[in-house]
Image 1 (cartoon, rainbow, N blue to C red):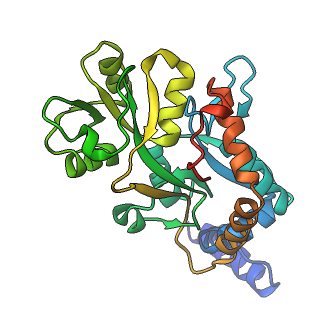
Image 2: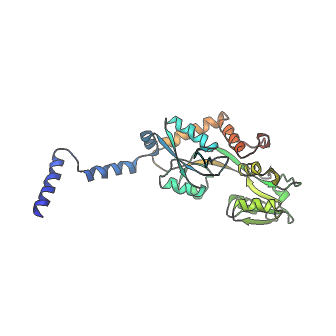
Image 3: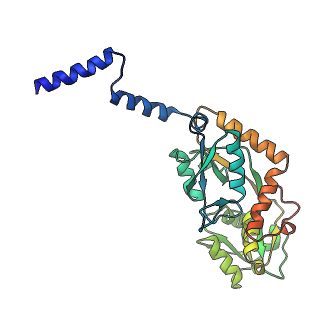
Length: 285
């Protein structure tokens, strides 16, 4: 035992004296460097940018089951951002809720189409707005509300998804209506389709996508008085090095200014069956 310890000690000491760090020390150093590496540094080193990808969430994401290929507005945007870094994309399948956790865990570099709520801002950072996303409703055929007051009546049945900003808006601006909060957005659509609701409160992009899939539901109207609109941003990690955020913000400002983001959004909506002429003129991307 003594001889073994001595030999091990001598070998380690000899390596140190020769300027060669022990393997364990090298591994520890590599881990430390990796832990401290910023998003900007990691993407430039690996030439890979990781994004949260959400299957079945048009107009932002669509995955071809047969080929595994991704498409949609967010994919077009991500590919263009990756070009800035001369990097390729890596897709990490997720959900809107889990994408926040994925950013915290350093599993992804970008998460698309997130509203910058105060609660989320406690955990992650946000870019400049990708689009300003107004709220409205899908109204049953024959009913054409234009303001919140038009649906804020005791005989109007309002559907919204439980715990969402749609529900918050409905309860704040149409408290006199018959509000039913369903578990999922799909349940709201079914309620409208079956005649159990007169309107379904939805953000514009979600409503246009739903109508693209099923035009018989009714029509989408943007509700005013007041206009309820929230920025939709890209989620990023909170970190001292802000170079990645600066690049993405410059990219967003440039592509919003040139109208390119609007074009990508329209292309994504068309994938769901929506028509460009169905997009309200006042809807700004």
